[in-house]
View 1: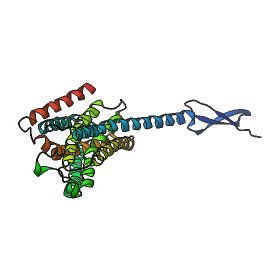
View 2: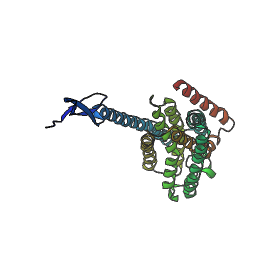
View 3: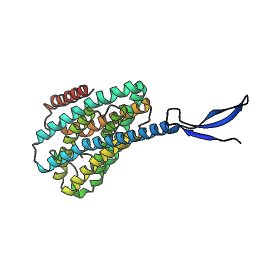
Length: 304
C-alpha cells in the first residue's frame, strides 16, 4: 500500500510532496513540487505591503504640495497684498515650474525612455491641456489665475455662472504637478523632495493670485476655500493613483507619463501664470523668474 507523506518546507525550495517509490527493490522518496511555498507567498505579501506604503506616501506628499494652493488662497483672501508683490510671487512660481519641467521631468523622461517617448509625451501633454483649457475658457474660466488688477483681464463676477468652470480649470492646472510627485517615488529611493518643493513653491502664488481675483469678483469665502481645499485633496489622490497605476510600468511608459505632465505644466504656466506675472512687474519679471528657476535648480541638484 502506497503511503504519501507530505512535508512542508519553509525555505526557498517551497512546498514538496514526498511520494514513496520502488527502485531496485528499495523504497525511496521522490519530491514533487506542489506550489511556490511560504517564501513565495511571503515575498508577494511583502511586495504588496511595500507598494501600498509607497502609494500612501505618494498621496501624502501630493497632499502636501496641493495644500500650498489652500495656503496661498487664505493669504490672497485675508491679506490685501500689493499687485506688484502678487505678480512678483507669481513670477517666482513660473521660474520654479520651468526649472522643474526642464530638469526634473524632461531630462528624466529622456533618460528613461529616449527621445521618442519624451518628445511625443511632451507634445501630447501640451495638446491635451490646451484643448481642455479651451473648453473651460469658453465657459468663463479664462482669467482664473488673475488677481483682478486689470479690469479687462479679471475673473467673471459671481453672477456670471462661471464658478464650475473656474473650479474645473483650477483642478486641470493642478493634477499634472501631483502626478509628478507620485511618479518620483517609483525609483525606490523615497520621494523627490525637489519635486515636492517645486510644486509647493509654485502652488502658493497660484492660489494667492486666483483667490484675490475670486474675492474681487464677488465670490463667497465658502466657494473659494471649498474650491482650493478640494483641489488640495484631489492633488493627493492624483499622486496616489499615479503611483499605483504606474507601479509596474516599464521605463518607456513612465517616461511618456513624465513628459505628458511636463507638456501640460509648461502649457499651463504660459497660459495662466506668466500673464499675471508680467502684469505689474514687466520690467523685472524676467529677473524674478530666473531667481525662481535658480532656486528650483539648486533644490533639484541638492536632492539628486
